[in-house]
Structure formats: structure tokens, C-alpha cells
Length: 257
Image (cartoon, rainbow, N blue to C red; front, side):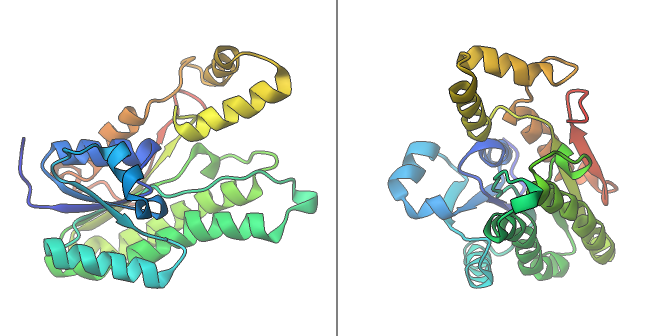
């Protein structure tokens, strides 16, 4: 295992793509601190991470609160001396038709998916600037490029990440800080499993039949795995990716959604 003496923060890192990325970075010798609201349940943390996870830790973080974000980042810097890598994977999803779209459904997704990412970047950039090195990866979605009925808030929040990332890239360029996004199509996570179960209840189909329908929505006829996203993220935060910034990388299995 290579030791980089670097520290990464992964938001939303106790499940799905965030967890896969956290584990991948830890294997390379990076100190990884996972931030998640569910980290307040230590039994849950132990269940997810196991008892022996060298280089992996988790602490409570609410990206919708500037106070929580600032305190979390300060604790990481105090413990490890710096924040070198930030993976913004925290996100929420809820459908609503535009004609009667509740304010709360809109506010929750914009606040978590977009404003939460903004708060995290704002908190870590001063530390990256002082070290003259930093890597920021925002988990967006193919929904950032393509609209989807009944998903105005989600699509808007993910599209906002692309614009935010361009601004961060320009402001960080002189300080060795890069900022990119990863936009996956359907990824086989617990969130997708919830969608499949909801479709099962509505259609009466089996889990495997509904899963196959999701797979067929991609020309490769397969779902993206969280580990595939993690491999790309690991490269994008490496020294080799120094010149990769202001870009969005679609892990789309050939699909535009």
C-alpha cells in the first residue's frame, strides 16, 4: 500500500458511491474521514465499516448546516493537519410533478445536493490553498445534462454542480487545486434498489425483471457498479490528473439517461 500522507473527506460516504470511493482511497493509504448524518449512530458506522478499517473514520456531518460543515472540517484539520481531497457524494432524491411541486421537495434537494457541496468546498479551499494542492470531485449525474419528467429539483441541483465546479476550477487553478465532476447513469446502489422495489409494488413484476428493465435503459445493457465510479474518482484525485479540471466525466454505459 502506498502512503501519500494525504487526507480525504467523503460526504455521504456510508453508502453507495461515497462508500466505494472511501474504501478505494483508503486502500491507497489515504486517510479518509467520512461525513454523514447517519454517522451519529455508532452501531451503524461499525456495521458499515467493520471493526478493522485502517485509514477510515466517520463523523457526523450535516451538509445543510454551515455550522456543522465548518466544525467538521476544523476537526479533520486538527486531527490530520490538512484536507487534500474532497469527494462530495452526499445527495437526496425525490420526485414531484412541476404543476404541484412542493417547495420543501425543491428546497431539500437544492440545499443538500448543490448548496451542501458549495458549503463543503468553501470550508476546505483555504486549507488546500495553503498547501498549494487539492482535489475536489463532485458526484453529479447524467441528469445534469438531460431533463427528466417529475425530477425538476434533482436535475437542477445536479446541473448546478457543473457550473459551480467551473468557478471553483478557475479560482483554484493558481493554487494547484482541481475540481471535476462525475456524472453516472443508473448505479447499483441502495437508492436504486429502493426505486426497483417501488416499481415492483406498482407493476407486480419481480425484482430481477425490474432490474433488467433498468439495465436495458443503457446501451451496454448493464448497471454501473459503485466500484467503477470509485476507480475513476481515485484517478481524478491522483497526481497524474493534475491537468484535469473544469470537466465532467460521464460514467454512462452509453446512455444519455
